[in-house]
Length: 460
Ligand code: TRP
Image 1 (cartoon, helix red, strand yellow):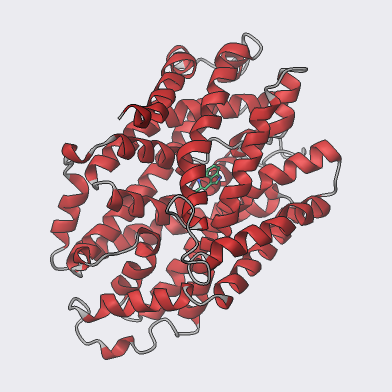
Image 2 (tube, rainbow, N blue to C red):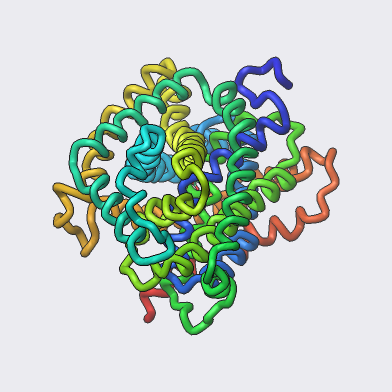
C-alpha cells in the first residue's frame, strides 16, 4: 500500500492523521467553552449521545463516499451523481471549510503566540509576585494577560499570518508524509501530557467541586439551544460536515476497515474532550474562577497557565502544553484547508503550491477581520455577534449539520444502490455485524434527528 503516494502509508499513520484532523482546538479550546456555557454535565451527556448516534454514522457516510471515488468533496458528488445538483453539497462543504478555516487560523495564531510567550518566559513575567496562586490574584493576572494579547490589533494578526504561511508549507509538501508523520509522534504525546495535567488538577484543593459540576447533569439546563450546540460540537470535533473526511478517506487504501477506523477516531476525540474538561473545571473551581465572567473563547488560555504555576518550572510546562496544542491545531487546520486545496488540484489541475496560494490569499483578509473582532472591530456586531462569533456559530451550528444532513440523504437514498454496504464490508470481504444498524442510522435516524434539532428553535 505504501507505493501509492496518494495514499496514507500505514494503518497507524492513517488513524493518526485522521485523529490529527479530529483532535484539535475543537476538543481543547471549543469544548470546555461550550460545556461551560451549556450547563456542564448535561452538555457532556448530550455530546456523547450525539457522537454515538450522529457522529459515527455521518463519519462512516463521509468515509464511504471519499474512499469509493478517491476524489475531493466536489468531485465525489460529480462522479457519483453526474448531471445532478448534488455537487452543490460539495460546494457547501468547501465554503464551510473556508469560513471555519478563517477563524481557526486566528485561534491557532493565539496558541502560537502563547507558545512564543511561554518559551521566551514572558508569559510568567510578573506572575511571581503573586504568592498564593490559589488566591484571588492569579486569575485576574492571566485574564488581563489574555486581554492584553488579543485586544491589540497588530500582534495577533502577525501570528495568524505565520500560521497561514505554515499551512502553505505543509500543504505544498503534501499531507500524507508531513502530516502523517507529525501526527504519529505528536498525538500520543498530547495524550500523555493531558493525562499528567489531569492528575495534577485533580489534586488541587477544592478540585472536587469542579469535577462534580462537570459530571453531575442538571437536566433542567437542557434547552433546544443546548441540543443544537451539542450537535454542532459533535460535528466540529469529529471534523464532519464539510468534506474533510471525504477528502482524507480518498487517501485510504481499499483494505481499510472503515467502521473500526471511525470508532477509534470518535473515541479518541471524545476522550480528549473529556480529559480537557477534567483538567479545566477542577482548576476553575479550585481557583474560584467560576464567579468571574469568563469569556468562553479565552477559558483555556487563562486557566491553564494558572494550573502550571502550581508546578515547579511553569514556563517549561506552559511551553510543552502550548507546543502540543499548536501541533494539534495545525494538524486540524491543515485538514480543513486540504478540502479547498484538493478541490483546486483535482478540478483545475493546479499545482499544490498554486492551489495553496489561491486558497490562502483571500483567507488572509477574512482571518484578519476575525482577528480584529477582538480589538479594532470589537463593537462591530452582526445579529449581536462579532465577525468571529458569527462565523463560529453560523458554520458550526448551521452549516456543518446542514451539509451532514445532505451527505446522509445522498448516501442513504440517491447514491448507487449498494455503495454503502460495499464500503462497510470492503465489497463483502469483511464481516460487519453492524452494517445493518449503521445503514439504518444513515438512512433514517440521523437525517430525522438533524432536521428535528435544526428546526426545533423555530417552534419555541
Ligand atoms: N475537528 C477539528 C477540531 O476539533 C477541527 C476540524 C478539522 C473540523 N476538520 C474539520 C471541523 C471539518 C469541522 C469540519 O479542532
